[in-house]
Length: 188
Image 1 (cartoon, rainbow, N blue to C red):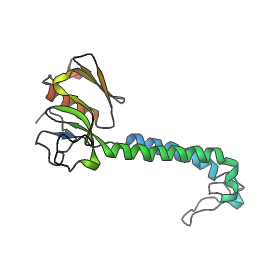
Image 2: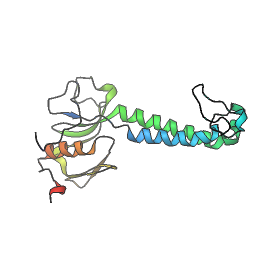
Image 3: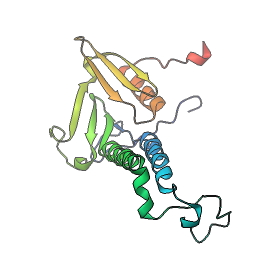
Image 4: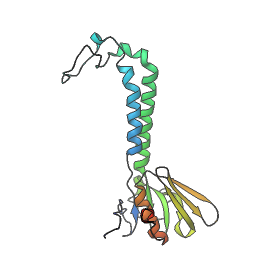
């Protein structure tokens, strides 16, 4: 195991031993939610300092304007409040999408597997797999961090899987499944 990468994935329920079901990484939803919070905060703090509300644990200068405004002052920053709420809802939607659509690489295919239907025993259920690409149709692939994985098929078609999973783990599993030697660019 020296020099081999630890693959960050799990075995799907009812799956074979070498099936790789990748857990999502919450980086993109987290950054998106942070941006939404940054858009909301100015709307909540635009009022006179003596009108601001401070949490009980706040021990700083109450005249410095670091508190939250009562709701009657929020109309001045309504645009940033609405935009921030929209971005936070977008982050929640991304998180739910990533949790419910996980990358599955097994012995025959690469696809997005629906986590909601993961306990079903039938392998050919149409609701379980989306964007199915069979490995014997794949000519080559590129993992473009942080964008995603691009598969080039022998018939000229391409399939794209957004990279919401650990990129080097996906690279290692795909190299193994396609029988490619693992490229170590840092050694060249």
